[in-house]
Length: 152
Image (cartoon, rainbow, N blue to C red; front, side, top):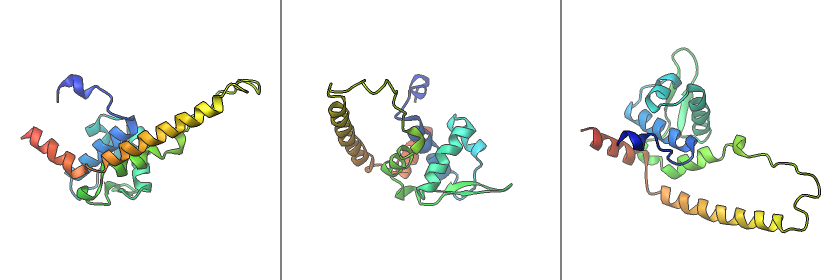
C-alpha cells in the first residue's frame, strides 16, 4: 500500500480502527495486547482505541482483561468475525447520535422538513443494509491473509 493510500480515510474512523485492531489481535494469536500496544500498531490514540475496543467487547468480538497484566484478545476466531459484525458493533455507538440545532418552534413548520428527513432516513437505512450485506462476505481472517500476502 502506498503512503498516499495509507493516509486516506477508509469508512468511518471507528470502523477502520476496529478492523485494524482486530487484524492485529488476530496476528498476535492468543497473546493479550495492551491498548497502547495496539494503538501504536494501528496508528491511533489509545483513548480513542479503548472506546472502539469497548464497543467490540460489548458485541462479544473481543475480550478485555483488566489489571496490570490485562489487555485485549479475540473472543471469536478470525474466521468467524465478519466485517459486517464489526460495522454493526461500532456504528451502534450511542455517542454518535448528533444533536439537532434548535432554531425555534417556527423553524421547519409546514415546509416538509419532517417528510424530507424521513425520506432521507429511509434511503440511508437502505444503503446501510446494502453495506452490511456486502461486508458479510469478508472476515478478519481474509484481511489477515491479504496482509500476509503483501508482506511476503
